[in-house]
Amino acid sequence: MKTQNMLISVFGTAFIALLLLTMSCDAANNPSALVGRWVAVSGPDAVWNVRLELLSDGTGIHAGNAITWKTENGRFYITASDKAKAMGYKLQGSVLTFTEDNGIITKYTKCNNDCGETAEKYAEAENAARLDSIAKAPDPKIEVTRDLISVDGKKVVKTAKVEKQDSFFIEELYNVLQSKRKMAKNNKVQIQIDPNMSSNVFFKIITTSGTASYTDISYTSKVNGSNHTERINFSIPKFSEVNLDESFSIPELSEEEFMEKINSKEFMEKINERLLEREQKKIHEEIKLTVAISKNYIEIWVRGGSLPKIFYKECQDGKTTKQCVLHKESREDPGKIEMPVRSVYDELAKSLINIHNRYIDSPDADKIVILADGDIAIWKVLQLHHKARTAGFPKVNFMSLN
Image 1 (cartoon, rainbow, N blue to C red):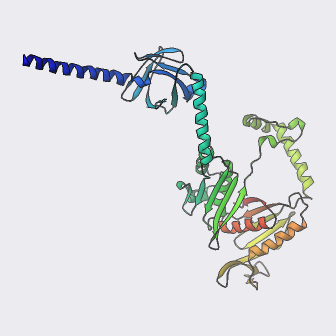
Image 2: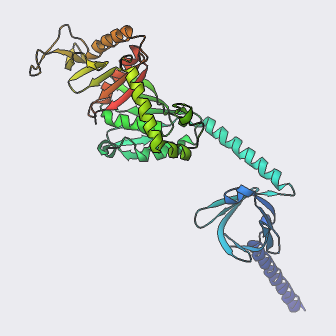
């Protein structure tokens, strides 16, 4: 009798274990947590707020079509009358995420009879979280050394590659900045650059940053052992600003429409005609101030004419190293440092202040072009920028001889 009871007990335990195992397999194939109504809130299906209803018997409805479904080994299998699909899935709280083999991700959230309202609330919450994240996002920091260009501490591209390329557009930097711009509230970017870096690299970084919609640019470099910071406002003309006359105005066009319009032969002829007229009117009004810097002299151009070149060379004034004004009698003359020692940048500042005061009523009295040899160290360009702004020329255009 004891043996019989023992057999019954063993059989009963085995039966219960088998039953639990069967239930476990069913739960794995059709986990109860997935059963219910769902609405798409992210991905391709979210465009139409597609509904998905999963029943416990492995059947269901997707976008109004009858389906069967199951899960196995972390994969979700769904079959309709005309097609079948397998994809990864993850359930986190009330959000069900499907990841297809091609990388497409679709998110669903659980709903009852109010699926439309649930989708709207989810979208509002996601947008609020995104805006909060954008508001807290720090301004990106670009660091430029002789070896690397990095953004927020992550390597982007080798400096040598940027120096050699002809284009002023750095694709690798642009891609990183554009991805950050989508998550940034401000249009500010900070640049920390090696003072001995060539101005060519500097111009390329500024151009790329502006193209990525970072129009408020601060750059810092060491000058005479201390950090020196300047700001640049990078401006890009808007499509709607092109308005020559009523017959050729372009009111609020899309980018595609704008490109089609300006590529027409008639439009280009009209633009050339208007630009020529505009230049002829302004040629006697604008001062067109340009400061050019090379390795051994600075030259100022005003209204198409140039002032005498200011030659310079490095010298010691006590314990301070300066770029000192050099007196030359001829081009071949090696020159002598003028005494008392004068900084070439201070000499430049005096000339710029005189020009600003003399032509203060000119339409471009606040503008200056800094033209630099591409091999000039960036700290020299930074000095020019600073002197130009303090002399009354806040609108600075940078150009490279390269």
